[in-house]
Length: 278
Image (cartoon, rainbow, N blue to C red):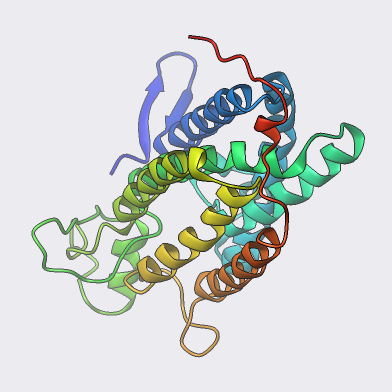
């Protein structure tokens, strides 16, 4: 775990592990979406323009969602803007990014379902990088675990503080007890979903099926990983707020899939020949 990777001497500029991974995830996801868009006959330049809107909306939504859950942990007003240190909630970013996408499309129309399909694998890649950032930051940690790959976190981190509060370790303990590396589970989940979506891409019969696949798979894996996380309390029927939203997203995915099956089996990319660079 490395919350601070290093500080540039003389400039007093600190590079945070979470911020670096978040940036890499954004760049990786954006470029993957642009590459996919070009292959599907969409304008890759529009992907980069759209990405700025989506990233800003996603960060605002993610931070707003975090404030609803953990706002009581803020030490000062300016901590609201310290996103490079953590405090980014994926489902909050999904709502914010979705709103930004629709606003952008109002001013610069584009084929909605083909574009969403192009973006979907990039979202999964962004999840993978973001969860590595969570691991470096020490947030989104798991339950106690005695498996060989269990991890411990140093003092003053969230897992350590939680265990001190619950009397599991003493205040003088240098590290937490071993816990599930749920952040790594989630990072691997993001990578697997990215490869799954890319593999499914040429098999889709209709535009929208790729992003629908993301809506159907990610909530299931997120729900299961939440079962062994220890940083959120249950709010409804023993489920955390992320599990509740996972159920809602999965239901939306089922309805969306049913809607897509009523549409003709045709794809935007097949409407005219698409030149693909070698």
